[in-house]
Amino acid sequence: DTGVSQNPRHKITKRGQNVTFRCDPISEHNRLYWYRQTLGQGPEFLTYFQNEAQLEKSRLLSDRFSAERPKGSFSTLEIQRTEQGDSAMYLCASSFTGDQPQHFGDGTRLSIL
Amino acid sequence: AQSVTQLGSHVSVSEGALVLLRCNYSSSVPPYLFWYVQYPNQGLQLLLKYTSAATLVKGINGFEAEFKKSETSFHLTKPSAHMSDAAEYFCAVSERGNEKLTFGTGTRLTIIP
Image 1 (cartoon, each protein chain N blue to C red):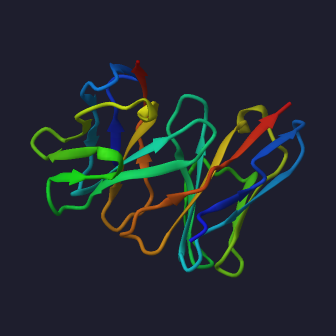
Image 2: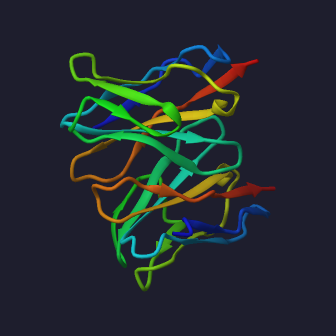
């Protein structure tokens, strides 16, 4: 069990650029979740997958955001045409089943210049 | 809809004193409840979870929480604070069959030497 791995840890980009984050869950975990955490707040749910199927998306996930988990293993979260308000920590979590607790990665901190 | 309220965004206790972090929840169905801890620039680590078994839940690092349905509360306690307990603590709720977590805004715990 090597834990949930997220890359990169930090991303600085200019407004309007596209960014992509990667999450590698704990092996054999079939559920994968994305959350966003802004400064001084708790994480907010964005979306989650069971295997390769995206089962739920939050209203926070605008059309500039897209998440994939093509082979049911790692996942990517892409933000197109980044805006100042996208600056946040993006957290990934995984779990074995819906009843098992979610294990979080260390996150990707996005800063928009 | 489900929600979590954490009373007190900042709590300070002396080393060796009792730690009490408050959490009240709202859920239309019997909830799953969690406490997570977050250290600076890291992801969230699960402290403990309640899933309708025993109402008093013991977690890691000497923490425990008691589920009180009549008060819709799930407060976190630790008998004797240690310097290493200084961190941000998040209470979270999840409805049965709906795995996304809804977090509170967090409580920053400071330990006074």
